[in-house]
Image 1 (tube, rainbow, N blue to C red):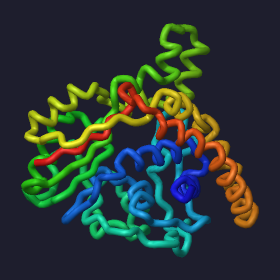
Image 2 (image 1 turned 90 degrees about the horizontal axis):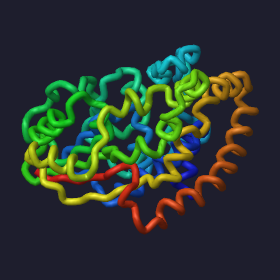
Image 3 (image 1 turned 120 degrees about the horizontal axis):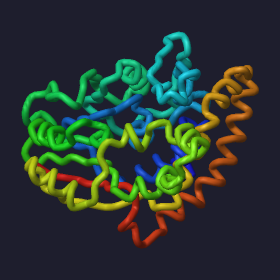
Length: 310
């Protein structure tokens, strides 16, 4: 319960995200950051911080810095915002159990948020579509959950091979082709009327059509990794179909309204509502999480977790 409570504390207005992140953490439970380490596409650092055993104050969440809510349904990244005056004095209740040497991301707003958590020794801005600004053989461990957002995964894998030291390991979250099949967009794909098209545009917001540029079966990902010189030492699947069905909508369409409503509350009332909210969704998420963890056959689950070695 402690893990889901921490994730719900951070992602409380999007509990489906907390559920997804809890499953991610379980999937990579045996992956360790060793030696000099790189979090490639670290974002605001919240996920990696919680995975590293860090604990957040109850008045912290990832929604304190959002902007352009009026453009939410135009697929604008509302999290690409940062307001110095909105910082709480100390978001960290307990420091993470370890540090990561470098956090790398293309958005300074996200790196500014990550800097508050004390997880990364160094934060570097850059585009992972380009050559990475690191010397060859300079990392012992790399983790990335953004490869499928990039233009050319084969190039990204070759760059990761380059920056990994001999016997270094890298872990990747990578979509399976089944992900698309489990979404409402797939379910309603034969519906051509304007009302269905408009509905799916509201629900999807370009996630499947734009953000997830690459989804492949196990063999195709393996071939790309092998071509880059990376040897697969672990593979597992996670996020079974019912979980994707829940995540695919969740509270996403309500997000701008929820932000406006919570922003209209005074801090005391907001914290009271949040406490009850986290408790309620904890009771909902825990059994759903058990459904995922107890599923014996995850062959067709929506994501791969792959660990490779140089």
